[in-house]
Length: 433
Image (cartoon, rainbow, N blue to C red; front, side, top):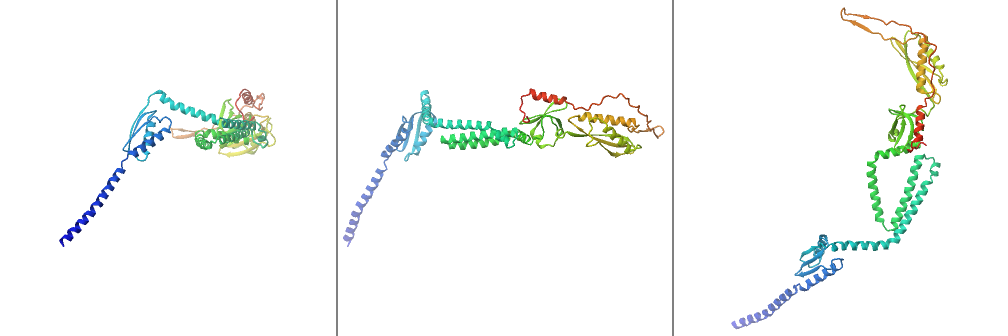
């Protein structure tokens, strides 16, 4: 029985030994397959092909050992060295990269890539020269067409636009036609991306320019509106806020007035378009007025009629509309009368007529012994604490002399002559002409 068990054990032992030797042989064969000498050759061959396909990198030396790549040689700059290092790291099977590339300080090596780039650009330019010439011809044709359309602006005048609006219309038509030519030329050159970039830059630049030159744009647009509305003409007497003068010219930025002192006054167009403006010349008829105080004891109706009769006999005062007299206030010792009369500014000067009207009414009152009320003062005496009132003595004014100065109400042309001389000698633009 013992012999049978011993025999069975020997059989199992003998059958297990070949199986173990077989498994050991398989392990040895797998370890042999991980030897990477053939993989190193494949890595070196692949890197050589890649760098050989790139201009200027075919002289780079490549060595591969156990997946470690060693790069040596000279490159034009350090950026190229970093690019080669990055290429080597992306190759499958590379474990590590030893970058021993050096920057080539040779001038010819530095200039060679630039020369090659210029040569390629020249060849590309020669190839695209016919297309470029066609695009240039299209641009020139549209530019000439835009200039021709801008110079023929009679149709803008026929639709009722002013001179400045017509000038702006000419520029817009010329700009639009030229822009269409530019877009077509870029499309011919297959530069649609450039078109989008130009439009984007133009939009951003337009916003920046709009903020930077906001006042200039406002004045320019206001000048267009003023030219279209035509609220004044050359020589008109206008008042804008605290400014008063005669209009000389309207420019794209401001309006130039000449004051009564002969000074040039420039008002921004945006101020004029947003402010209340009075044009004293548009209606040739103009009314002047003045106040006169008289003592209360006088008959107010007769006194008012006396002043109206004096105004009706004054040269330059119109009968239609007729002069008016109003009782404005009534005080303890005096009443205030207001006289108003109309003149034709084409024949009479406003300030001269008002001055003469005050003079002749005052003379008429003096002749009727109607004198202006005198002020009354009350004096307090400290020594006896009594107040004594001394009424002023009323003295009659002497009768007016018969040889009074000649009346002058003619239109004052001194400023008009200066305006005319300024317009004749100045070459500044004037949108009112």
